[in-house]
Image 1: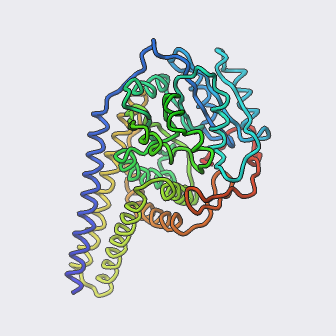
Image 2: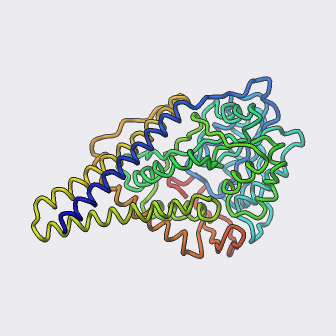
Image 3: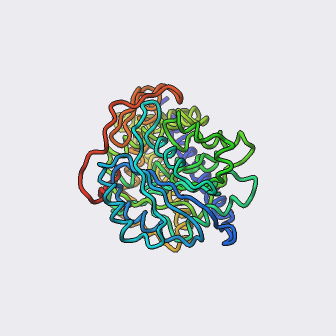
Length: 421
C-alpha cells in the first residue's frame, strides 16, 4: 500500500512541477512576442507622473532622479507625501533643488486622511486634484521603482491604440545580495505569481499609464475614494468602458531591495489579501495553494514513512521526486528570470548570473516559499486585519474596511531605508 502511495505522490508532484515549468515557458514566449511601443514625440504632450510616498523607500532618491531624466517632451511629476513630518518630505525638497533643472517636480502634502479609504488611494485622489486641466495621460509610479530613460514614452506608447485603456508592467525581485534567503524566497514566490498576473491581465499600479479621458469615463477617482488599494479596481473599471489591459515587456521593472524572511512572509500575506478583496481569480489561487501544499506535505510524509520502515526503494523514489520537482520548479523560475533579463536588456540593463551556491539555496527555499504561500492564503481568508506601511486596516470585504489609528510614518533618518518597508 505504501509503495503505491509513494509512487502516486511522486508522479503527481513531478508532473505538477513539469506543468508549472511549461506555463513559465509559455510566459517567456508571450513576453518576447509582445510589441514594444513608444509614444511618438508629436504626441508627447501634457503627461502627469503621479508618485505616492510614505516613508523613505530604499530607491527613493534614484526614483526621483530617474523620473526627472525621461526622454519625453512634455511631462510633470507630482509627488504626494503622506505627511509633512515624513522624512521623505525634506529629502524630496532637497532632490528638487538639486535635480529638478526643468522645474517639472511638484511636491504635495496629503490632506488629513479618512478612515474609510486606503492611504495610497487618498494620495492618488489628492494628486489627481493637482493636475492641470489639459493633462492627456496619467502615469503611476511607485517610489521603489527606478524607471529607465525611455520608461515614460514606452509606458504611454500602447495608448495610441484606442482599444487599450491601461498600459502596465510588473515587478521582478532580483536580490542585491544573492545569499539573501528573504530576497530569494520573494523572487521564487513572485515568479509563480507573475505568470497568472500577466495572463489574467491584472494591472500593477507601480508602473501604469492611462488616458485621462478614460480615468474620467471609468470614474476611477470615485472608485479610489472608497478603495483600500490602488490597482485592484482598475481592471474591472477599465473593462466596463470596453477597453483592455496591455502588458508591456520593457516595463517589467527591477526591484533589488533587500528583504528579510519575516518581511517576505507578511508581504505575501498582504498581496494575497489584496487579491481576495479585488481579484476574481483568488478562489483559483486558494485551490492551487491547497493542492500544491498538500502534495508537498504528502511527499515529505512518504519520505519519512519509507525511511522509518527502511524501505530503500520508497525512500529513493520520494527523495528523487522532491529533488526532481524542485529542479523543474527552479527551471520555471529560471525561465521567468530569463524573461526579466530580456526586459532588462530592452532597458539597457543586465542581470548577473546565478552562482552554484545560490541554486542550492533556492532549491531548499522552495519549501519555504510554498509554506509562506499557504500561510498567506490562510491569512487572506481568515485574518481580520492587515498592516501596511505601519498602518493597520480592519478588512472585511472590498467595501467594508477601516483604517485604524493613523499616524505619520515614524521618523528614522533623512536617508532612505536600506530594506523594503
